[in-house]
Amino acid sequence: MTDFKTLLKMNSFSSDADARKLAAELLLTQYNFELQCVQMSDSVNFAHNGKGCTIAASKISDNVTIFQNVTIGANQTFNTRLNQWKTLVIRSSAKML
Image 1 (cartoon, rainbow, N blue to C red):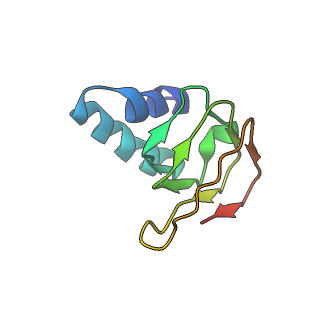
Image 2 (cartoon, rainbow, N blue to C red):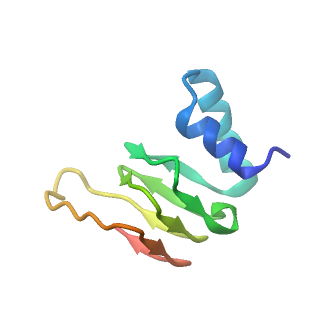
């Protein structure tokens, strides 16, 4: 089993589309982790290997820590308000929609 941090780095920052796709599939099957961010800083930390996280349509900035079973997303049709925080910790089972 490939470790979480390696797969996350491949999925988020690789210039190879095939490597990103493979990493996304492995993250989903091995860690129940789905990531489709618009933009994510390389300083984002997933505590507990991001188990059970679903993150879509988001921009995640520097120094954010995300625990397990977190859902982050946006309804881009209706969501016109933008919130920005610095050094954020998102605890277990949080839902940010």
